Length: 282
Ligand code: GUN
Image (cartoon, rainbow, N blue to C red):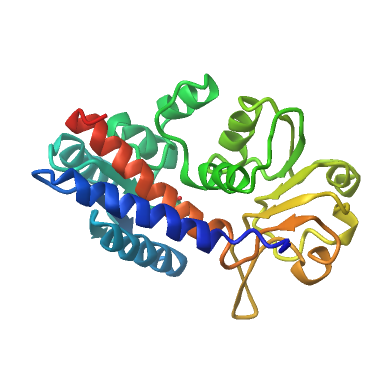
């Protein structure tokens, strides 16, 4: 039995199913996703390219609206407002990070909750906490789907997350609590982090620090989910020292080919959910 959890394989299955669902609708219009990019961040360029390519594959209209690095917050809000009101748009992403003169919280909260395909809006996050949301942020959702795919039950499990970001750590903590897991969310101030992690049934690293998770963090029954997407020496690598950790643990996600493709697949799923809500399709 392979110990690799192949996110690429499962993402392809989900994308094929979604493509079929969209085709079968024979609807008047296709789902539409708009991505706003400010400036020319190199990592963002790559992520956006992947998102648009994935949209095309499943039959979602993906459109990029790129603005100058110096756009004011006021003008950006005007652009968002136009999209919020556009009846032909189902989902809106404002790609992060934003330039420092723009308040990220202000902007994510300005996106209509009805088009909040990222699930970063305060209202969406509140509903996630209350286990009452239609939309879940794509990376945490992708992780839960991967675990479900491998028949890994979360109830009563000891899950340790490294990282408390608004995008991954915080929503994921709440989503796991709602699945009856016992969750510990670590941050850079956590004491004896290796010992804390070593006790986990499931270790999820979303720290954004290459090679952080070594053999000292893991045990032989552990499931390791690597959310890291770091560029190290011109190579794409996760947070986990894959070569040494994979020899010890029960299951592990690779980078690339683990959580990354699942994030994109879940983003497409979210776009379809918002489209169906809008069009009153069950
Ligand atoms: N930057 C890095 N990941 C993401 C994401 O999932 N959504 C947005 N909007 N920006 C990001």
